[in-house]
Length: 112
Length: 109
Image (cartoon, rainbow over all chains, first blue to last red):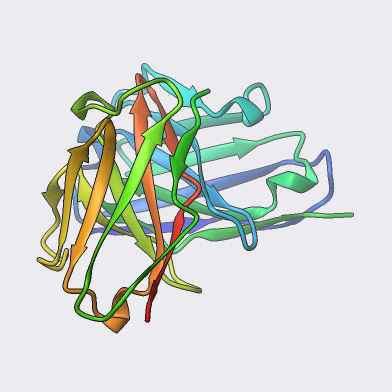
């Protein structure tokens, strides 16, 4: 059974940092692009970033470029999102996803 | 980055048929945009209905189908059920990046 479990969310002040993790199981993690998607309260889905299987290619939505980075550890079947210089409008549930599968998300709240 | 457009809301009668569409600001949507369709119900994570234009997952009800229609990606629901009332999102790929549409709120009434 495919499982994606996000962690690392929480309350952070504007300008702060958080590192999200996604632990994967039930599939060959190293064979797939992985994505981060977010959803602000009451809003639609927004694709945030993705990373190629071997880490050689990364892509980001314009609004997070220069502030967020993505990484993965294929040996540990884990995906990460390092979020720096967080802004109030980064407040959202962050989902890890690949193909048709989604985690349950982790809530990031940026507020003073 | 591109803008992906969906109908904000649609209504379908129980047992009826409805088509949701997904357009791109860059021009016609093609199979090269690898269209995805997702369903999301309140308080839940999204679930994937369709990938790569028309492919279904094992859990996708047979009444949902995906296609390209008039330069857009399309999701057709044939024989709507009350449990199909939800928000539906499409996702298009632009080289390495991805863009979601704003979502369509589907009411079954």
